[in-house]
Amino acid sequence: MFMAKKKKQREDFSTLGELSHNPFGSLGDKFGVAPGAVELSKKKEQKEKEAQPMLLVRMEKRRSGKMVTCIYHLQGDRKALLKKLKRSLATGGTISEDVVEIQGDFRERTTTFLKAEGFKVRQGN
Image (cartoon, rainbow, N blue to C red; front, top):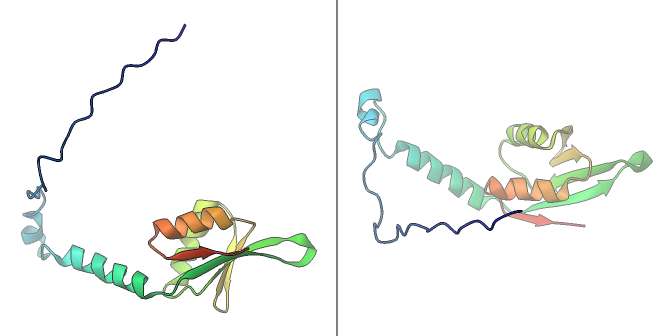
């Protein structure tokens, strides 16, 4: 027989406010890195992704019934993104002209991956 689990009490951290202590803050001085340098680089990457147009992810049918997932309007480092995509989807892919092509019908998984990377994505057919 199975017994019902007791619900755990959740801690309320809303009264603490924002945490201001950074335990690694002094390491920046030791290695010669400015404290806000990492945050600035992240903001720069975020601005580049926001400036990028909305990506279109759609499936196309090729010769002999092969399915290919295509990503349109991708700017920046396409090679690095394709490498991450191929690794996460465990499939092959290539870049032809301005289109990133992935072997197989991976529209859903590609869309969720790109959204997690911070891109604006629209899914086609």
